[in-house]
Image (cartoon, rainbow, N blue to C red):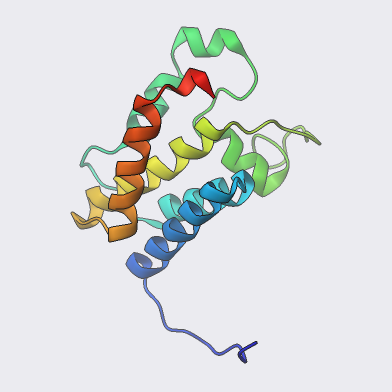
Length: 144
């Protein structure tokens, strides 16, 4: 094992590396890591007026249909639970959660689309993920 050394970084590089690692974890089924890394990447990127998927998720999570379902209905519920053990800091703690593959896919997609909105760029890993996601969705999410 190499000796740890300090690294100089910047938001663009750090968020890109977090997204890349989230994608790697996704393919292994490590959904807690996926959501934590992708959520951190998305969160550290600067706000932008350009469209990206979190805006859609935020609006969707407030819809009456989603609210009626109960449970994790906020756009950041899983991200918050993985950070704090609750849906909001200082809120009621939950010892267990069921994280679907789809939830993990959504959080990565949110991070990738915000990264693109901010930098107008996709890395090769992001492009590969988007191609893989398209095929995954086309083959039938409900069949899994």
